[in-house]
Image (tube, rainbow, N blue to C red; front, side):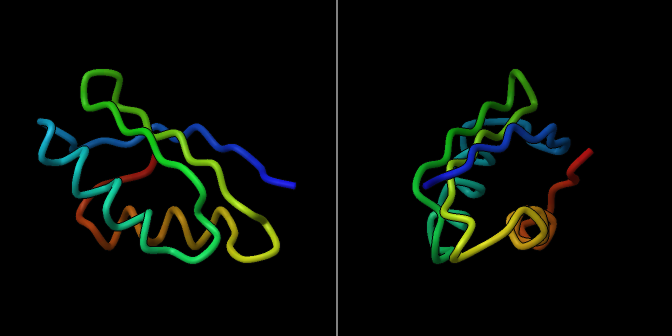
Length: 69
């Protein structure tokens, strides 16, 4: 069973930023789907909690150069 998280993310300024986050999160084992919006400053992530957790997802976003609120 999957879980979904909607995260407020600052620092995204364009579609390239969205693609960066989507690419980084898509590489995390257990992440099923990612949608990022720089206009809404939001990242929606569907993931398998048996393979990853919200802390790892947030850490990946921070490592990509963005801030999770």
